[in-house]
Image (cartoon, rainbow, N blue to C red; front, top):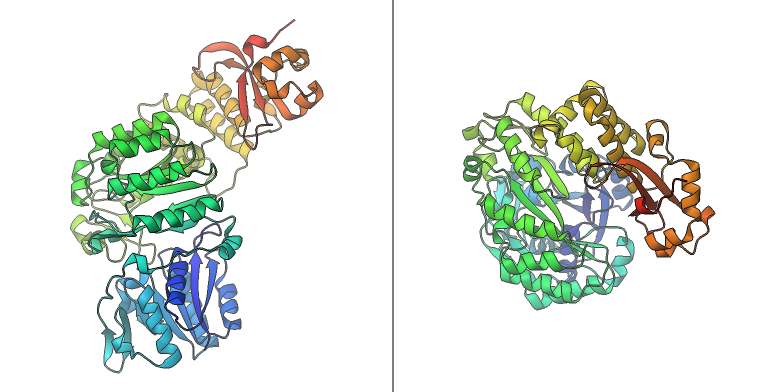
Length: 572
């Protein structure tokens, strides 16, 4: 018999935690042999169907999520035509709730946790035992109609083996690795699947430490914890962070989703003092409207949240990613703007403007009518409008999301954005204006190269804030040069110093040694090729008027180092 377990990831850089967890458990249980395959949603239905057809499967098991369910259904329909005898099983979050619709294309739907169910089904298809009715956690149809065998008992997480090994890492060198140290969530947020479950189960800490030691020993680039609330138990979270700090390899980054209200002093100190780049923290703020937070049962003391975020951010060692959700109950356009301003003021490295998805199994999906929430019929079930937020405003927020991602979240326009935001009453008002400009000029839907993005932002300033153009131009030039070496043209040439000034500076070995000793060993001809000296009319840090010279060093190990060379420039 030939069995295939299939994941369809959202991006190539992702790896499938579900397929690896199912595989590790099944092999530990001595289940019949199967093969695991991973695809991405960027691959066509025809390609995936052809690859599976060539494997001549007797049964195919699909791991279903909102990002891949549409593509998976198409693949299943094709397989039904070219492999009419194949048995189809669907599992995962998208299959575990409202499973009746999937039974129109699948023979069996696995409901809830899938590890034990996967093993039972492999044995059933291979040996005919156990009978489907004797397998908990599945739905299927027979001559008696739709049958559901009841909830599968939860596993002890310690019974699931570690999902990575040295051989497997070789194929994942450029992928994000996912790791699960707990299941469940202490909260009952109504937009999340946590509202459908109860309680939290934890993997024993000694096992967690052993697993993390493997990642560290092999120099993995990034590990994302998929725990819904990493710090649901703050003391346990602190122990994990302390272990990672004590065994830091100087390479690996660990990403956590955390609840700000459970960030105690010990955890905050970890994120303030750890090696820069060791930790990445994602915090779901979602809204700062108290009425909205009450409706979604999201406990959030914004004052405490802001205090924790500022303390971590000031240290500059932990990357902070804060989330907002548009389309929640009682949050209209104006209220969302206030939530946006509150979170923007915390200056996270990433500010995600997301949109409510009426996930199967979530409280808001069940109670959507209470709040006038209407979403898409098909995955990802994204909000179209609510009683508080008409569709026109949803579209306006989509436009703002677009420019926010291109400019703020790109992290390459920091100084220029700071200047431009100050021209408006609020940050939200600025991004609203920029989004309008972007749409009016027909820029949406097109790719823009690096130089074009800076030019577009300068043109926006020229059109809307003439007085700020000199300062914004200087900040844009600094931001641009800080992203890497680039050929200057048009308006950018204003930062080029006089050739004689630049020549004298590069020939001044004493000045170069004082600013960047590692450059002193290079001849001036080399500096001309690998550095850039820029002449601005404003101080890059304060914005104050002054003739300022900055040396951009592109030797700096994959990054860019910048030095204030003003005091070392001789004009004559």
